[in-house]
Image (cartoon, rainbow over all chains, first blue to last red; front, side, top):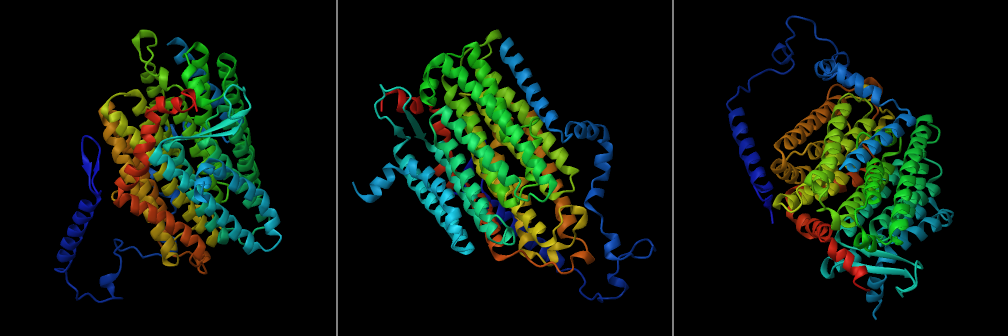
Length: 111
Length: 521
C-alpha cells in the first residue's frame, strides 16, 4: 500500500519520513551541546556586518527582482531571445502556432 | 428498476445535465438571496460529484459505458450522439468536479465584494459542463461543440475584472487563440468526415487508414489541442490569462486546459491507436515519430516554463509559467510512453503522466489559491511590493510551502510520486531526458524559494502593517488541496491502483473502446 513500484526501483514515503525523523532527532541532539548562556538584546545576538552600521530591516530586504541576479545576468542573451518571443502580441502567438504546424506537417509529410 | 438503478443508467447524461441546467437556473435563484445562490452552486456541484462518483464506480467495476442520446437504431444515420465513458474519461471528470467544488468554496470569500456574481457562477457552471462533456463524449464533433462552449464561457470569466484593462486584453488573447485552435480542430473533423463519413470516435478509430490526410489531421489535432493545453512554444496565452483572471477562475480554466490535454491522449491512444505501429519511411514506426515529437515539445515547455518563471515578479504570471513547465512533464511522460510503445517502462511512463495530471491540478491549483489569498489581503501582485507575510498569514504560508515542495517534486508530497515514475521510465528511453526533467525540478524549487523569501520571509513592510490572514472559506479551499497533496504523497498506491492504472489500461486497450460501439450496442 505504501511502496510505489516503478519497475526498476521503489519509493516508500514512510521510510523517507522515518529517515527525516531520525535526522531531526540527531540534529536536535547535536544542538543540545551548544551554549545556552547567551544574552538576548546584547552585542552577542547582533548581526556582524564587518563593522558597517546595520540598516533597518525594510532597507535590508532584497526584492524578488534582485534575486538570482547572477543567473539572469549570465543568461542575458538567452533571456533577450525569450523576451522577444514573449512579445504579448496575439499575432505573434498565432505565428508560433502556424510555425509548429508547418514543421510538423513537414516531418510527417516527408516521413 | 429501482431509483438508484435508474440514476446509474442515466448517470452519463445527468453528469452533464446537472451543471448545465443549474447554470441557467442560477440567475433565478440569485434573485432570492446571494447566500442561497452561493449554496445552490455548491450543492448542484455536489450533486454532479455524486453522479460522477456513481458513474465512476460503475465504469471501474464493469468497464466502459456507452450512453446514446437520440436514435437507438444504428441504421438511422447521424441522429444520435454517443457518450462513451471509460476509466480515463471518468478520471478526468473527477479532477474537473474536484476543482470546481474547491473554486466555488474559495469564491465565497474571494469575490464577496464583487458585482455580477450571478453571471460568474452561471459561466463557471458552463465551463464545468463543457469540460465534463469533452471528457465523456464519444463523438468528435460533440467534443468540438463542448470545446467551443468552454472557450466562450472561459473568455467571459477571464474578463471578470473588467475594470482592469489587462483582464480584457487577456480575455481577447484567449478567445483569439481558442477560436483559431477550435477552427483548426473543426477542419480536422471535416477531413475525417469527408473520408470516412463518420463522427463517432470509436467508428473513426476503427476505419482510420493513416492516409496522407489522416497524418494532416493528426498534426492539426496535436498542435491545436497542444496550444489549448499550454504546450510551448504556443503557450504564451497561458501566463497572460492565468495572470489576469481571478485565481478561483484559474482553477476552472485549468480543468478546461486539462480537458484539452485529455483530447490529445484520446487522439493518440484511441483515435490513432490502431495505426501507431504503422511503418513510415526509413522503416520508422509511426509511434516513435509521434512520441519524439511530443517529447521535443515537452522539453521546450519545461525549459521555457522554468526559465521564464525565474525572472517573473508578478506572482500569478510566475505560477502561470510554472504551469507551462508542469504541462511539459505530462507531455514528456506521454511522449515517452508513445515512443516506447510495447516496452515495459512505457506503461510506467503512462502511469506517471496520468498521475501527474491529478498532481498538477492539486499543486498548481493550490499555488494559485495562495497567490489569490495574498492578492486578496494586500491588493498587490508584484513580489517586489510584498514581504514578511508569514508573520500574519501563518496558514497561507504553510499551504504555500506544501504547494512549493509538491510542485518541485520534493518527497514525501504528491508531486514526487508522479515525477518519480516519469524520471525512472524516461531514463530508460534516454537518460538525457531524465536529466533535463530533473534540472527543471531543481529550477522549480529555486523559483519557489525566491517566492518564499520575497513574499513570506524578510521584514514586514510598513505598507502591509494591517494585513490579516485570509478568510476561512479561502483557507478551507487551500486546506483541501494541501490535504490532497499530503495524502497522495503518503499513499500514492491508493490513487494509482484505483484510478490511474485503470485509466492507463483504458487508453492502451483501444480495441475495447472501439468494440463497445463498432462491435454492436
